[in-house]
Image (cartoon, rainbow, N blue to C red; front, side, top):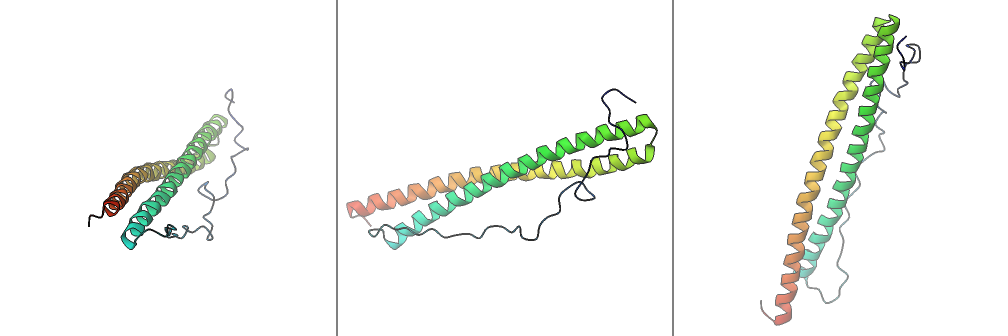
Length: 154
């Protein structure tokens, strides 16, 4: 047996045939909550601008959380793929080519899932950046509207 290689009999356990945990049906996207302006002096347009900025900030936070979660998942999947590669190498060293082939097939599926998760992480991070920019524009519009109303200009 190769130094540092595991025995072919001690195959890594998986929760699902792909090595990924099954998606729970109770995992659903959180419902959006509309945030209301509590300032009694705010007008309808002013409150709408503040609501837009607040809801964009909430969506940005959710996008960042999704990006972090996808990045963590991708890291776990990449580690799993490496463990499967090492297991396949150990199986080849022991002469169990069918077990090695099976481990490499699972590794390929896990690697594809890791790439998809990395892609989701990148997309969510880009979305968060765009939402931050949009929230800044909405907040500036709300501030400009308050400034104009303060001077009596309509």
